[in-house]
Length: 106
DNA sequence: ATTTTGACTTAAG
DNA sequence: GCTTAAGCCAAAA
Image 1: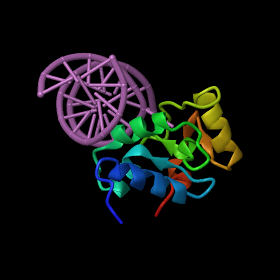
Image 2 (image 1 turned 90 degrees about the horizontal axis):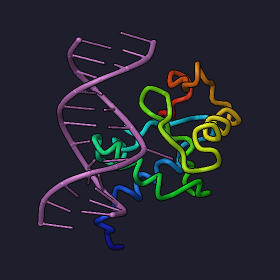
Image 3 (image 1 turned 30 degrees about the horizontal axis):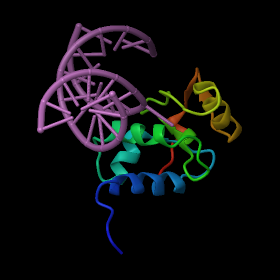
């Protein structure tokens, strides 16, 4: 199998994000860290933006490090994202996700 | 090839 | 606890 050098870490991001169970969320930094680039949190966001609510990439389960969210390219954006997470059983706290109980732990 | 922008994170006030 | 500033990675102009 040949290695896709350019988007190598992108595929990792998708793979990891796909492993995140329902009702759990993951931060951009965590995804980047698991992908092999702990400082590429921004790049992760760029990747998500190009891929909307693709059935293969649950970008709505990706939140910021402090539990809040920065953006979402699907539905109404942020509100839709919150709604989806809430439907999955994610506990919210003043508009922010409770990372203490809802953050995915590999 | 260089500059700008962006779904980020951490540190400091 | 919230706001402001600086740093980092990758894609788009």
